[in-house]
Length: 254
Image 1: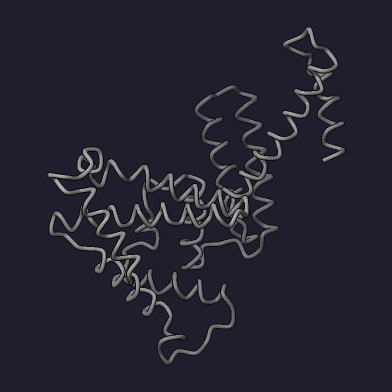
Image 2: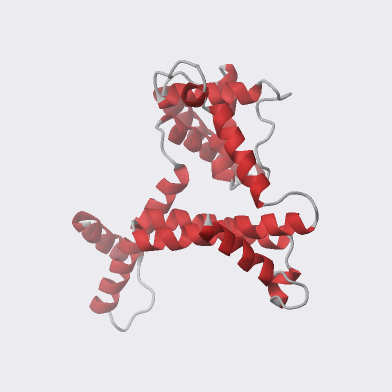
């Protein structure tokens, strides 16, 4: 494809030791990895905002990261961009025998996901092997519970998980009461882990839910802040009861 070849040539020119960009030449897998993660988040953000032009641009930036890594690998004689595309193509064909082979079509997307995970687990010593260590912890919690469910270690219903949340919240309250920081951190972790499991059972992305909550809080707080400054222009700090009253006013309208 002409456009892909142009991008690959551009990357090669940027990495050219004699005529390329000093910054691009200096980079390696480890130094580029944070940018790759950042670009993936920016794609997610653009999708969340629903701005088509931004989605297009951010996907381009993410593709550039793939090309960057592939170029570094090619220079080291490890693999190249064609190897990357062949690897993912072969993997997708293997994982979709109901499309590219003779397997029966699964009853649902959920059933297909279960089959994928079961197939991947066959060659692992543990079903948890292969989960990236540097995943955001909330996403890792979802994956841990998802992979554990492959061998049947899972709550049968979300209501059971909600009951578990009540139990963990009670244990957190006990830890707070005795003021043990270590116990509080441990119990808070359990609460967050169960929340991630609830999200999985509801087929929701907990990171997306948290982003939504953060956005809602930001909008409401800034409205409260604006009202407070209008009503009491000479103050910089306000009593909680006053702010809480404004918060309820804002909340009732949004």
